[in-house]
Amino acid sequence: MTYRDSVIDYAHKKYKTRPEYLWARWPRYAVLRRGDNKKWYGVIMNVARGRLGMTGDGDVDILNVRVPAGLYNVLRGENGFLRGYHMGGMWVSVLLDGTVELSQICALLDTSYETVKKKTAQ
Image (tube, rainbow, N blue to C red; front, side, top):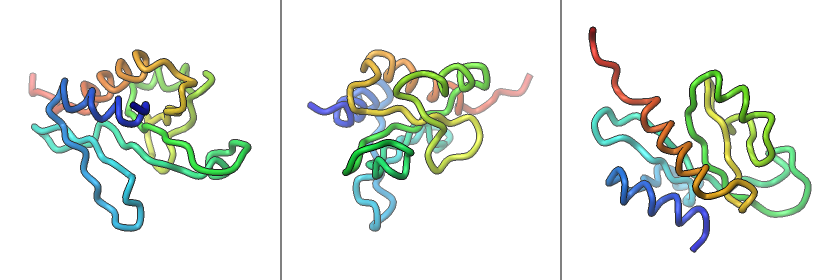
C-alpha cells in the first residue's frame, strides 16, 4: 500500500471521510473534507517534482494539511515538508514518498482535522 493509499484509508477509518475527486483535469487530486462543516482538512495531489522545486523527473504525491502558525513555522524547515502547494494561509505540503514517517503524517492529518473544525460560541 502506498503512503497515498494509507492516508486515504486512515481518513476513512478515523473520520469516515471518503476522498472527493473534484477536478477532471487532475483526476488523482483528492480532497478530504470534514462531514460536519464541509471544510477541507487535507488535499492529496500528485505534482511534478520541478513545480515543487525538487530535482528529478516525474511526479511525487503530497498531502496538504492545515496547521497552527507555530507548527507551520517549524515544519517548513524540516526535510519532507514544503510551503503548502497551491494553498494560502497555514497549509504545509508533506511528501508522501517515505521521507516523513506515516505516523507523523497521520498525526498532522489529525491536527488539520481539528484546526478546521467549527468554532463554538463562548
